[in-house]
Image 1 (cartoon, rainbow, N blue to C red):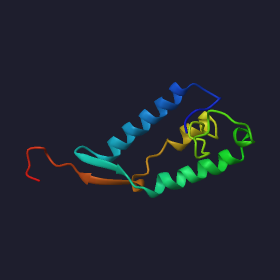
Image 2 (image 1 turned 135 degrees about the horizontal axis):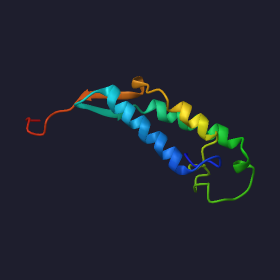
Image 3 (image 1 turned 30 degrees about the vertical axis):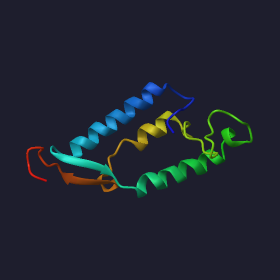
Length: 106
């Protein structure tokens, strides 16, 4: 859900890369990072709710819909909102654990 009509997808990708780099720095060296399931589930419900009220879901048939009827390509807000959304890393949305060296016994 990162396609927008207000800017290039390159901008959106740059914002995601910057977020990932901030996340890696915040987690620290030697840390494994996994996404907790609840935050993306809640976020996707929020996006789908916003998209359901958009012109994209007004009854037209388009390639934006999956076979299940979800819109998974479009972002319902603008690029500035996406940038603000990714400004702060919320470590509570991730499972952080110490990486084990590959030469250590399992």
